[in-house]
Length: 89
Image 1 (cartoon, rainbow, N blue to C red):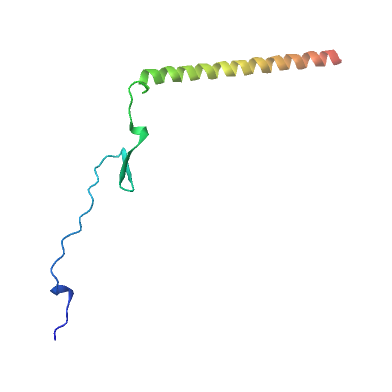
Image 2: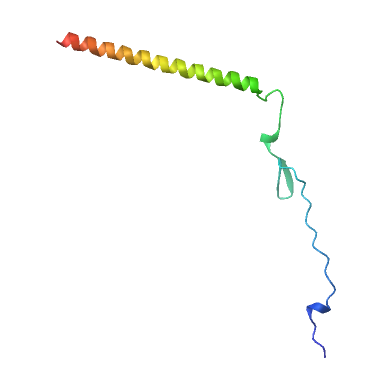
């Protein structure tokens, strides 16, 4: 009686892998496809480069105004402190 070996078996066909499309904006979970919301480009809500520059300029202006207001308040506090010292003398 001859022993059975792996070499006696017919070759198996390669296992078929599921073909997943190469779309980085789609994720799969439990066999369902989901589109990533960040990948959806809506022209009405997209910010252009010109608008980004305007927003950056507005942020810089607001920061400058906040700094100037803080400096004015500090100067006023120094003046008030000097007036109180002069009043106390």
